[in-house]
Length: 130
Image (cartoon, rainbow, N blue to C red; front, side, top):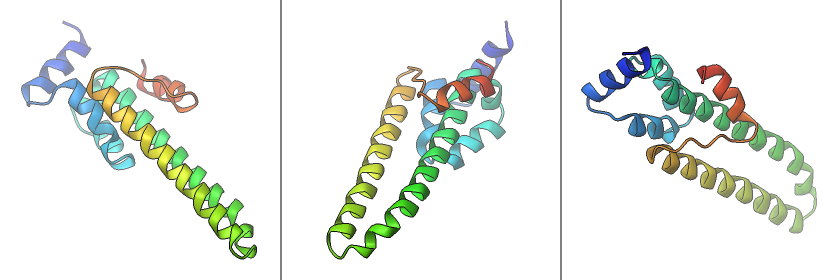
């Protein structure tokens, strides 16, 4: 019996499957990602660690994009109506895209599928030891 199966059986013993724990890593982004990296037995399961790290990196990236977009669109506010409308549209697009990716990751993790995002996925795999 390996370390991975011991973590799986102890996670199942307290009533939460690996799929549910993996999905919960995404639920509140940074908060639940960090929580599942700290709590045993979840922090010993490579799959759950991967989802926790990917959740953290994805949400940090989303925050960085939000800040960059805000800074870039600040000059647009100088243009009376069109600038504000364009700024709102760009912010909505970033929000909607982020929510869509977040829900997709949540759904796929719950169904036991491992989706590796382009930039943050390999970092998460490296950190999780997968």
